[in-house]
Length: 215
Image (cartoon, rainbow, N blue to C red; front, top):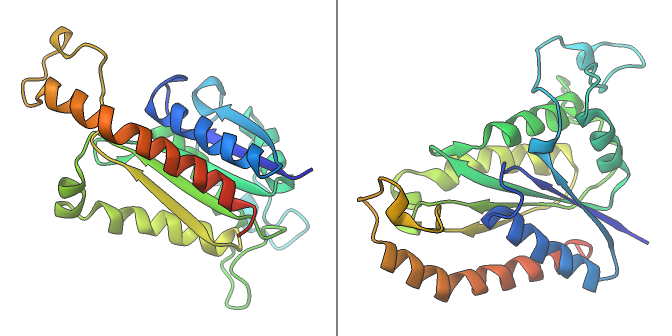
């Protein structure tokens, strides 16, 4: 049976990102896959420490020297058949946990060579699911898709496969906006948008997960 792993880059186990990942995994299960959801913020790990152990010209080439909770996760990803990364956008960037994960997974397999770009052992279809408080108009205004495209390009190159994307815009941050200083938002408009759009975003995530193994 094929295996699909989803990485939740949000500290919230039951937030927008996690919910969309769950839908994507349901789609993968419908396609016949075994699935696993990993919550990054439950793990004790760090990002790259720039030791360059992974760039050595010996048998350790492409191996991250760090040994922590992320080490076995990366090994399971290398054995998987598809990878889905859930990315909450914080302050116009990837969450720090997801950024550290990408460093550890991708940089260690990226090669400073004119001959080959990667030592990742297989072709691994992959996808990014982005969740953000920003509207689609703001994403275009600030060039966020172009910014994200850098990570997507590296993922496609290093993991030797197509990288798919799903954007969930204008997500709700709080269950009760009255409890927080948030006067720049219209809570009723937020709620109406979520009621209309989040089911569509969940359906899109389901189809994304279902399609990955056919990549």
